[in-house]
Length: 71
Image 1 (cartoon, rainbow, N blue to C red):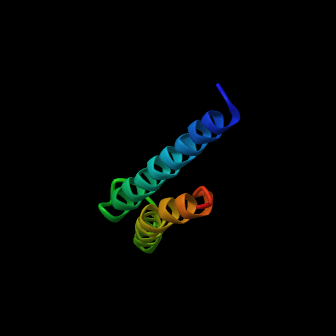
Image 2: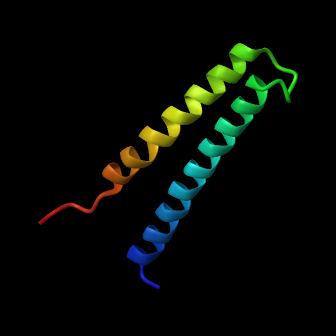
Image 3: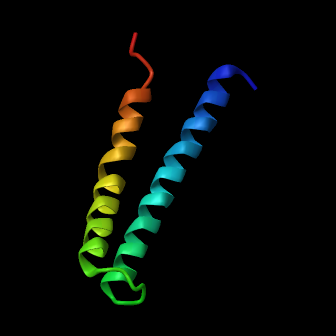
């Protein structure tokens, strides 16, 4: 395996981990909002919003940052 393949596998793993962590954060936030976890509801709203923003913004940002230069 060459360096480019190793980099691609590492980046794929990082993107997958970011997505999974975002979904987990959203799930915890929703559980807090639903009262399943005994933490104040505003914290659950914050967790959910932060998880959604992370899910929607971070993977495309990282992909753009890692994009191979054209040329």
